[in-house]
Amino acid sequence: MKKYAKVKGLRIFPNCESAIRLIGALLMEQDEKWTSGKKYLDMTEYFEWHKENSKKVKEKVVSIS
Image (cartoon, rainbow, N blue to C red; front, top):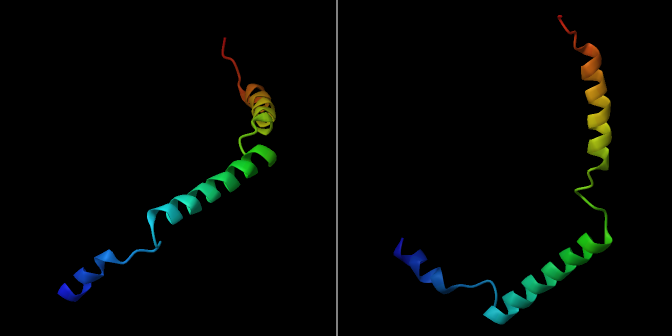
C-alpha cells in the first residue's frame, strides 16, 4: 500500500493554466451551442399537452349534485 502513496503527485495536466484553458474552451463551446442551437427548455409542447389532457380529464369527471 505504501508503494501507491507515492503516486499522489501524478497529474493529468502539466500545469494549472492548461487546465483552465481547456475548461474555458469547453465552456465557450457549450455557450455557443446554447445560444445558436435548439432550446432544450421550450415549454410550448408541454402547454399543448397540458391543454389536451386537461380537456380529457374534465370530460371524465362527473359531478354529483
